[in-house]
Amino acid sequence: MSDITLDQAQAAVAAAIKCSGENDLKMNIAVVDAGTNLKAFARMDGAWLGSIDIAQKKARTARYFDMPTGAIGGLSQPGGSLFNIEHSNGGLITFPGGVPIKNAAGEIIGAIGVSGDSVENDHMVAEAGVAAIS
Image 1: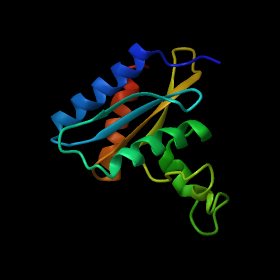
Image 2: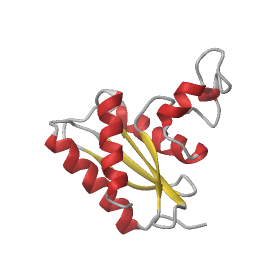
Image 3: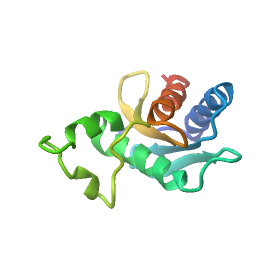
């Protein structure tokens, strides 16, 4: 199993911070490795304290299931095939802002989770972090 390097994790965080700044957002940004261990984290000045845990859970959720957290949210609605999944694994986040990170060979090496604004903005910033590695 390939794993994200510290340099890659820090590059993802830096790109997410840059995107946040360009859009006047204050975010918490977490990057986990392939085993869901926290590899890099940043809390931007003024970012909500309550979003620290959410950012980390978004990153872990994206890696646990190797898909964006928003996609899991679509499957976890009442009547959906994954209804109530958010109660597993010590608590998952099933709304946008968590995205798997792949290397050049297409292998998942980790994930990024972003929280601090609307889920649309969280997802945009997470995608900016992923783009710094892909």
